[in-house]
Image 1: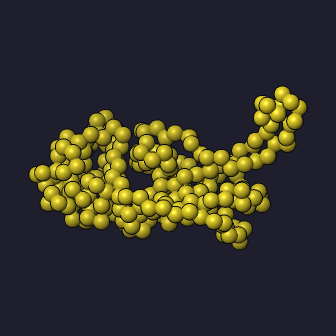
Image 2: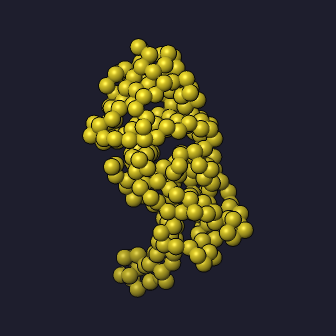
Image 3: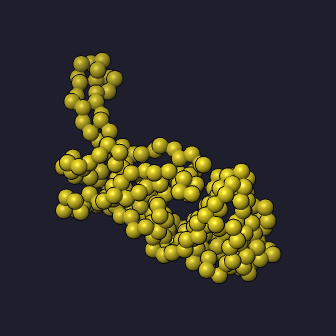
Length: 230
């Protein structure tokens, strides 16, 4: 189930899902990727008693995501007319995520962050560090537990319209059938992150050709390993 969620977030945002959705993930958290999701193990500022530098914030609209293989079999489009709509998932398990009032916060200066990591003697090559986190005012995550399942949502049409556009705050007014794998609702939690990892950088090809070689150094580079659905 975790991998289905991670693949859903990756395919839509090119970011890594937070497991569990809604966890209190912060900038500077480090951990590992499991089944396409970030699993926290600590925070670089806490272990070193350090402070992050400048950060940048922005705001998104509400978000509504389904697994890449999901398809609507009832209630075409974004305005279900009969008070229900259903999303099927073919031969795979599937996930639906609604997140309202998504806010993004990012670290601006990665050089300082890299210096902190260099001082952390217990840093592992498998660690990834959070450089951007997306949090939302409210979220709802529903998933099937079997291949070929479907999620059916029933409520007055105005409520369904809002949910279909990402307003997770109304999910408590909706009857959901088929969410046997995951049924989560919450507020003020993280749903996805951008990660960086440390990588060894040496001389460029041009420097090698001219003889102006540089000593290899460790730098932070984006983690972009794709997440494949189950």
